[in-house]
Image 1 (cartoon, rainbow, N blue to C red):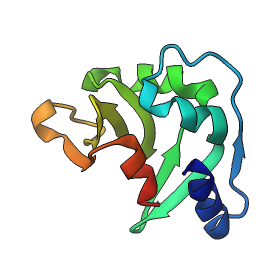
Image 2: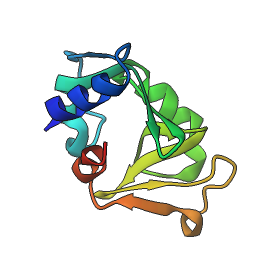
Image 3: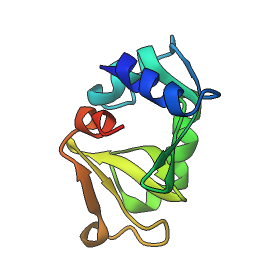
Image 4: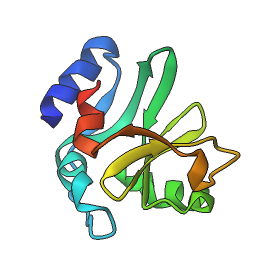
Length: 119
């Protein structure tokens, strides 16, 4: 499934860069392990409905968690024009980068896999 995601991204943005990741993934939710092992987004920005979605590479995930720690989400893996995109439980959400109250969260997908399939 992640190979199809990579192919789709490269079709529209040929300069995008993916790699495999050999590092430890213990601190990441199980739902994203295969993605980062096989499809680590080194330089991946996707135009999604006119908005830029940037996927964070495994090597920078800890920085991203610190940057968006105020939203108290389980795991931030991407941003869209500065707004975090994150897992909480099994679902994928976003919220304003200046907010973060759980009542302001917008659900984007029921799972990480279903979110990736949208691309």
